[in-house]
Image (cartoon, rainbow, N blue to C red; front, top):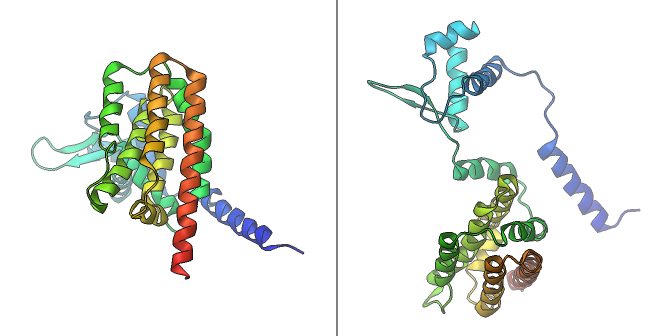
Length: 266
């Protein structure tokens, strides 16, 4: 016999498999051509802004129909890897995928099966302290000033709920800036992705708009302690402070979520 928790875990595992198990299918010709265009960009060491060969040249190079090449190019444009311009001097050009575009595409993976607050904070607790430890003693004076400027957005009491919400977003901006400064770009991007999921989570948005916010002083204390550890190069302390901050933030978010749920069903 299984209990409710086991049933829920089974459903979650099934959702995870649907999200991450590669589909077993034959790849279409435009997809294969798109991959070959990517190979061409790499092999010729083309950079953002460089022009790609003309359509007729791609058709000849890949022995492909015009419609197939156009579909491949459209797919690459949707992915943010190329852009097209019309008119004199127009054509297809290599483009750099922006971080915001990448986050939008990735967020759609969870469009129908949103992660929970616990899911997101499990990632944040595991990764953000690692970022803090890596940054200890390596943050430039100008970047420290940017972090301090971000804190100033929420170091005072808000005048209304609109400012309060903006302050909560700025608190996330502080952590996103740390992630962007991370010397490990994969680790940094993973943190930004988790933070972005939190921004877009409907429950989190309700909590951020809650007229009974968390103590600003508690959050500020964590962040000022973290800045001091980063300035002085105390990696172990930076890790510990960041970890404690994530644990406290998760505790607050789950507490507010419980109260909102009780209010909805009261």
